[in-house]
Each structure stands twice: as C-alpha cells, then as structure tokens.
Length: 403
Image (cartoon, rainbow, N blue to C red; front, top):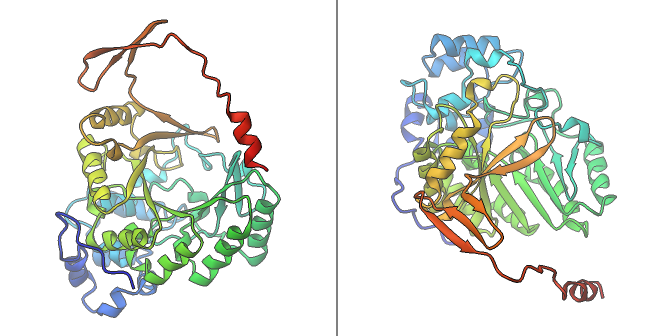
C-alpha cells in the first residue's frame, strides 16, 4: 500500500469544492461526492438545471439557448462547485457556460480544424503523423469545454465505440508497424469503465511495435474523484502509459486535483499538461507562470501552451499569435525552464503542430552568431572551425541493434 502523498507547499488543506458543495449540493453525502458516477448522473445538462445553480448573465442565457443544437452543455457538480457565481469572467465559468458569440461561425473557422477526418482510415483511428495515431474511444466528457476543438465528435451522436469498431482500430495498428505511439482520446477515455479501458490497453500492450500509450483526459481537472487507486494501478500495469491532462488556470489546481495527479505519479504514471491560451481567461504571462508553478508543485510537467484551434464558435476566445509569443518571452529567463511550456500552433486543415518561440538570434555569420538574452543584451557565440557533423559510429550501432 502506497503512503499518502505529502501536502504540496502552499496548498490549502480544505477541499476547494467544499464551500460550493455546501451551497449548491447540500444534500450530497460524502460517499456520493467521492463517487465519480454520482457526478456523472447529476451533471448539469440544460438551461433549466443551470439556472438553479448560477445567476446567468443575459449573454450566457442567450448562449445556452442559441448553442443548444450545436454543442452539448455538461458540467460535473465538482467543477460547478468551483464557479464564481458573481463574476462572469471566472475562468471555470468561461470554460463551461456558453455565451452568445459561440453560436456564430466566423470566417476561417472550421468544423474539423485539425484536418483529422481526412486522415481517419477507421472510425476509431486518426493517422496524421508518421509514427503515431490517435485512437478515438468515445464521444463523452465530464465537462464540455466551450473551447473544444473536437466538438464535431463530442457534440454527441458517435457514442462509445462498438466492439467491432475497437477491433478494427486495433487491427489497423497491428498492420502498421511504423506506429510506435498511440494517443487515446475522444471524448474522455477516463469515463470508460476500467474493464473497457483495459480491453483497449491490454491488446495495445501486446503489439510489439507500440512503444508507448498516451491518454488525453480532463478528468483530473473536472472530475478528480475518478482517479482511484484501482485506475492508477491499471494504468501502471500497462506501462509506459502517459497521462496528458488539461489545466488552463491556477484556479483549477485544487487539493482534489492535486490528489488525483499525485496518485497517478505515485503509481508510476507520468502526468503532463497541455494548456490552451484563451483571451481574457489566461492570456497573461503572470497567470501562465502561476499555473506552471502550481503544476510543478503537484509533479505535473507543463508541456504545451496551445494557440487555440480555429474550431467553429471559438473565435471570441482566440488570442493573436503575438500574445502567445509575448507570454513565452516574459517567462523565458524569469522562471525555471521546466515552467516554460512549448508554444504550439496546430495548423488549420491538418498541417500538424509547429512550435514558436521568440527570436533570440540577431545576426548569423560564418565565424560567430549574435544573440540577445532575455534582458535584451547582446552576446557573441563563436562558431567552431570544424563543421563536419556526421556520426561515423552510427552505422555500427544500428547494425548491432538488430543482431
């Protein structure tokens, strides 16, 4: 039995959801509140339910009404308990309650912003990159994020994979030996039962050329009670399995979320974070720095800061590319490199990810390169006289690897 994780420095002892739970769900017992299935059954899914808990602004009310045929609403009681009911710019509120702008499609927005469907040889498989595939396991989430890039799937109608679709997806991977990395996503794979999740992990683990599995999930953020010891042991059994989660604001890094993430790490399951840059929600270097520091304290690595994809209905949340570059520049040199995520843009239409950073090179010459540092000061880096970068031993190494 693993010992409980030590409390993180500076973290409050009282659960962050406690006040909201007492106010919004006073009849929920401790057993119910700690049961993720109870949260799924009691999620807020329509305007009538939402208005029982939050005094909506006219913009939010219109947003719920006008997007009802476009994209699901769904908020777990836990995540709802974190909402600031007095401030419409609360980051939890902005991510879970639609506004009217979401019902409008702007020029350049795409139903399939990442061009996944054109590289989808099976219902469950997206094969866009040479050595890795995306395995779409279901269309359900604990919270339907208003910035969702895959809303054409998570709006409903595709549901959990059938056994035949899962079989065909696994068979596709078996027949493509170039695939060494499988990202399981959806929807949220952690909403599968452990039996269904193991039915996917076990056969993937047996495929010789699959070297690693990643699971994309927002459960540690929005439904942390789902991360049980049993789930963590299951993931560890099929290592290497990496969990890629999705904190966007330090308000989400609660003691409950910390416990979920540290349970995974303590069981040997690495956790990384991909945040999305959103206008007026986290579009400030101070917020991103605080988020990164909070994540590192709970042993979650800040991995990507994503420029928002051009998904339909999300233009009001997108930031200019220059804002992300500005944030990275304000982080680099002012905090540890571990706290500086990669700024990534997933090119519209299926071009794949590219990463951006401020340009620190001022001049390039044959004998020296001139840089500026994070303070704007100039520094010379002398280029070497020898420039042959071939690796003579590599042919020997490669031959021995396959003996």
